[in-house]
Length: 139
Image (cartoon, rainbow, N blue to C red; front, top):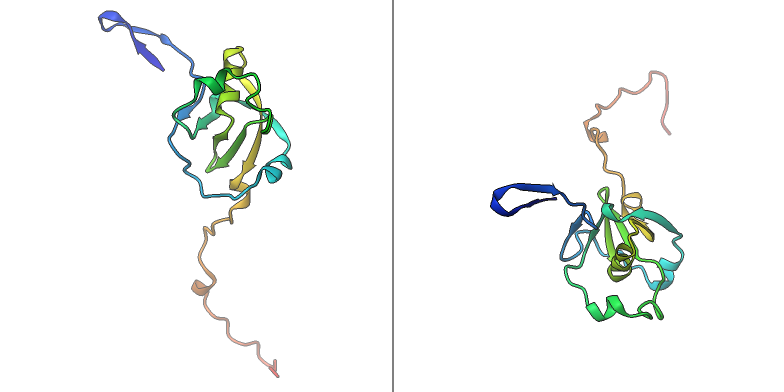
């Protein structure tokens, strides 16, 4: 991201914490419960590859020592159309960024792997019918 310096001059490029910030989820509802999320092993993810699904955060939650006391220790992300969306754990990710970390452990639900593969070729209706084999009998 480039910032404008006073007088219209260009300043150096400043790295962002996240790839992008959204308001809402672009992917379909997955219906995973907290127990379902717990079955997904966490993996390391660079924070600059994540797109948030929340535009606002609560400063008291960000600064709380026990904010994950009743929740999952790992943030939750959803992979959809090749993008990673941070669904839960924005405050945990920001705390990691404040500690100068650019990689965090995240549970990732890969909806790309779960959605059906789209057929790219012609349907079977477009294939011409073959004549019957001579001498064969159906019965």
